[in-house]
Amino acid sequence: MFKSIGPWEILLILAIVLIFFGVGKLPQVGESIGKAIRSFKKAQSGDEEEETATAVKSSAEKTNGTKKTASKKA
Image (tube, rainbow, N blue to C red; front, side):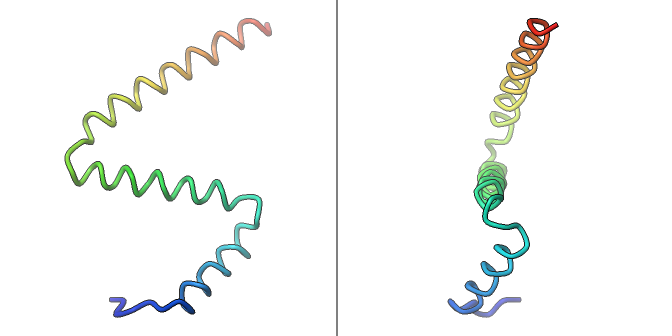
């Protein structure tokens, strides 16, 4: 599909992303892309089951922490 992407093409893509998302959102976009790449690599290597268990555990901890702070405010 892509025979070779040169530095000018990459620069053009980055400029379009900068215009589209703005300077403030670039760190969030980069973080999201990094997480997606990491999860893709883990899924390829077969570590998806461990990642899913960790994600469920961390989301449960976040939910419990949210409920505690909400009950303190009420």
